[in-house]
Length: 65
Image 1 (tube, rainbow, N blue to C red):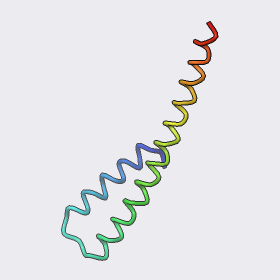
Image 2 (cartoon, rainbow, N blue to C red; image 1 turned 90 degrees about the horizontal axis):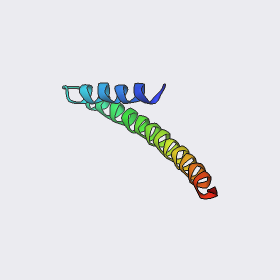
Image 3 (cartoon, helix red, strand yellow; image 1 turned 45 degrees about the horizontal axis):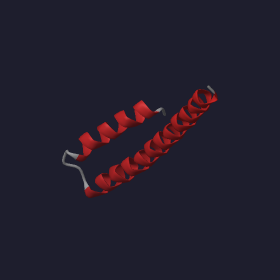
Image 4 (cartoon, rainbow, N blue to C red; image 1 turned 30 degrees about the horizontal axis):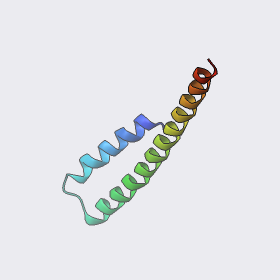
């Protein structure tokens, strides 16, 4: 599942959590949302690292001048 789909899934879970549901279902949905959030944070951290690497490479090219 890609990042955008994970965000949409989190939105769906949030809508369900705002409805009247059983405690068991609420706990399960909350647990699922935490797992998806972890995956999203991992993805964002990897993207941040990649951007930093690209910036460093670009800076090295600038510093050669």
